Amino acid sequence: GENVEQHPSTLSVQEGDSAVIKCTYSDSASNYFPWYKQELGKRPQLIIDIRSNVGEKKDQRIAVTLNKTAKHFSLHITETQPEDSAVYFCAASKVSGGYNKLIFGAGTRLAVHP
Amino acid sequence: SQTIHQWPATLVQPVGSPLSLECTVEGTSNPNLYWYRQAAGRGLQLLFYSVGIGQISSEVPQNLSASRPQDRQFILSSKKLLLSDSGFYLCAWSGRGAETQYFGPGTRLLVL
Image: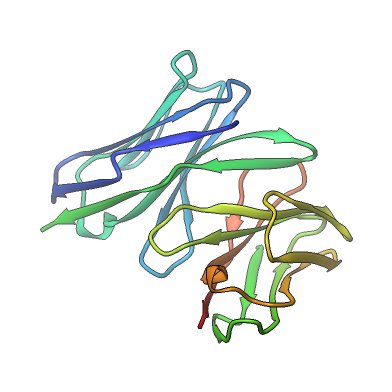
């Protein structure tokens, strides 16, 4: 069935370093790839997304890259800050049956140390 | 702008008791609505989705049910809670035909 694998499960970096989280998906029909940030006890918040007709997208310190051939996509955070500490979830989706079914990765717990 | 509400925010219930969680969306019409469950320290599992009033689809067999009595109201229910029903329940919405899903604040349920 449809599956999204996310690595690493935990990531610890020093403030100012870069962080990279990688995801692979199984369904080649997937065409939308959002990333969510979830702080402790809070709701997941969309931070960036990319569609299958685009290879890269950037928003200030965060960027996402997509390799459709290899079926993987990555989140890049540069100049990390302590407030970037959270759990990050990737997802892949396609429209199916009139709705957009998101398949989530298991999450990456990012810790940024001052 | 659109907002999504969930209540209650937290709930402690005994095993075998009923459950009703409510989700409402403001500022949009005909949204797609979703219920997810997140176990402690885990990922997001889709439980139900709805593309319209009275239209409910279930993703996984379980002890829960969902209903959509109004366009912008989505309810998650159970007749008898199990210990394994504990978790963080998140409602989400997306525009009709749109890809992006936005999550509500969630309900933290503890079954004892």
